Length: 303
Ligand code: MEV
Image (cartoon, rainbow, N blue to C red; front, top):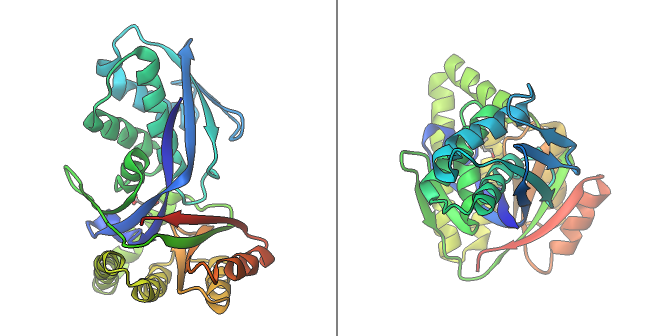
């Protein structure tokens, strides 16, 4: 059985596409994958997936891209049927497609008895992610591969640094609506940047600055500053056009219930928000989000 982590983005989504730093944490939620001998096939009952390379579906296309990149590693004779068992919701902004790609690649390599190096895994998962999101920063599958609390800067190779937090961070993640289309949201930000290059360019830089300061705040154990920076980040993401009334309402409810900070997480357009809480406020924040009809996932990261 191979596992890959889902992730929660604490700071920096969208700006990370333009080379700014982002801060993310691997979650205990993720995707398990098992490989067995058979024709190339990817099956996930929970997500309604039964895909084969070249079957005309997006998942089939992503699977084909992944298998093609793994070809030299697993050898020409390999042929694997992969079954996925996810614990993360699909398409909610928690990196489900990246966790799927990484877990699938690991299961294929395990079944083929091949050693899978990190660069090949990163490139294979990137090829799969490109099918779902035209211009992925690579952050989602970098976290899917390694978990933990990290700062990430896109590049070849990307700059990935572990962040040591003196104490764990308590989070309440809540899915408020079905997730938006990441590719369309990323393209929407690009279009807004084309229309207003100076204004949007400065917002993207501000998001990067907030992420840098947030990484430092985590390292210093300054959760009050981290919460404030998450609030600022949500405002900046709203200015990019990726929040929704449902996300804004959930963020407001979490703050009202005592969260140190709250923001949308992932691509936006629906999906999830994340609140930074303390052990004292966690259940009050979770109840407030539950009362809005959201699906709540408490999480503890770092430390
Ligand atoms: C999606 O989890 C994060 C985005 O920044 C897209 C990306 O980094 O590729 C919106």
